[in-house]
Length: 233
Image (cartoon, rainbow, N blue to C red; front, side):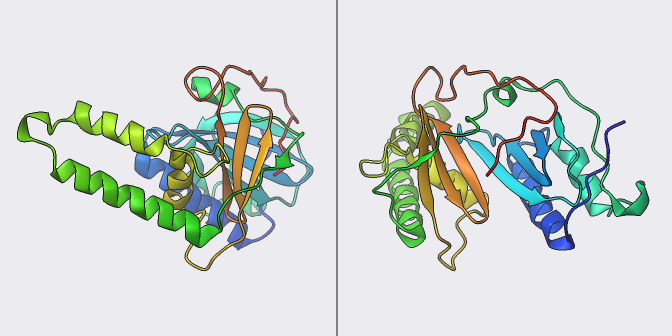
């Protein structure tokens, strides 16, 4: 039986619960991959339409290794119930589910370097706001015969695939970070890191990673589900 998750404090659990709730807002059947090692838990999810990986970390009291893909909804239920079914206040780890393809395609463990040219949090939010306004304006200007899902999807792909300056980071990654609560209004520090074909937008509230090379955005580098293999964030 998998050992329960014992968070360092109530805030760690609450922050993770908020992240899970946001993922479930976009996909009620969302799955998350959990990796823990040395008292650090990394939770990976992929909100539909953004085509990015979202990563939230939490500090645990235990150092037991863990690597499993589970239902985000079941994990959230366990946190909201406060571990009522688990002794000593731990949160039960839901049963493993068959992982979606993205769960085997995670960013590398190391080799990250800082990528220059990223605006601050306020600048990033401004770019997203401008893109949203552009989409609405262009949508309103569409002729009636072209105001359909296919045309809106095409327009959205064109806007959100644009990159931030010379960084190579697609705008959809910043949009995802804001939508998931990683870019709150009080100007958190932000950084852009790169490792191979991967870029990672990091804030104190979570990270968004995107594969910028290879087919379908998220490429085909498999990361085996091996117990104890956790990514430091």
